[in-house]
Image 1 (cartoon, rainbow, N blue to C red):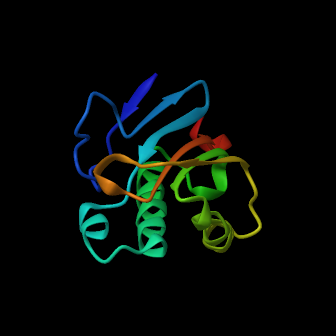
Image 2: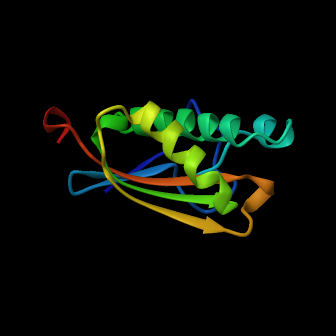
Length: 127
């Protein structure tokens, strides 16, 4: 098992790593938008872009990309954001369609509107 903390992301505020590599998989902890995005004008689109950018950084530190993702769990505040999530997520993921769960929640930490947790498979050359 390898604990990953990406130098391109802020140090985790809690007792966790950005990601953990184990048995050929990368488990990315729940990712929230950056503080500037959360504290700026409330925009689901901007927060989702920030979360996906941060997910890419955690994956890159582990040797993966979004196209290596096999499972995505997304937590969104407000079920009305679900259709917009689908559009923006599909744009970022392209033809890649990992297994996914979208869970509407009443609120998230720090007032965020979206949080994503990922599982990816290491590319064959990285195992």
